[in-house]
Length: 114
Image 1: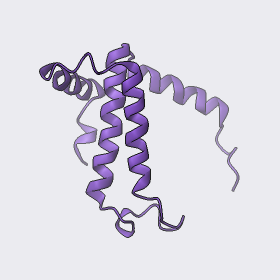
Image 2: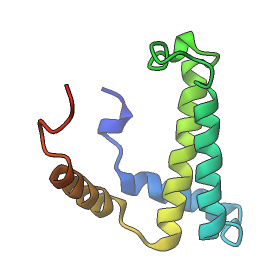
Image 3: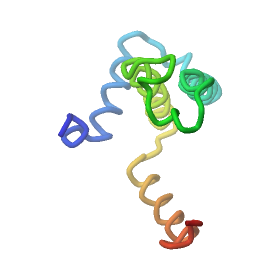
Image 4: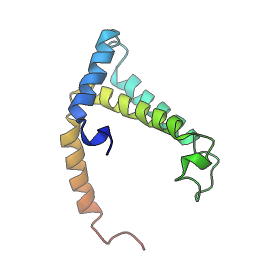
């Protein structure tokens, strides 16, 4: 398996925080700017699949984008999400587990249409 199974969210958050600090970007990383950046990068990710049919959408190689372009845009979204969590002091592991628990209550197993 890849590095995902060996890298923690904390390690990624620290890497982003260090990158931002080394460049003195803290004043630019306001919650407004970071949330806008998340939306912009998500739109760039969507653009890679924009003109695909629904049948082709799961397969980036059949799109106008390569796997590496999809990975880059997905990484950009994650970078800004981690930067926002850093800025707001949000523990993403706790937030994610809490949200997944609420999702499990809201969408119990077997509740999806066939």
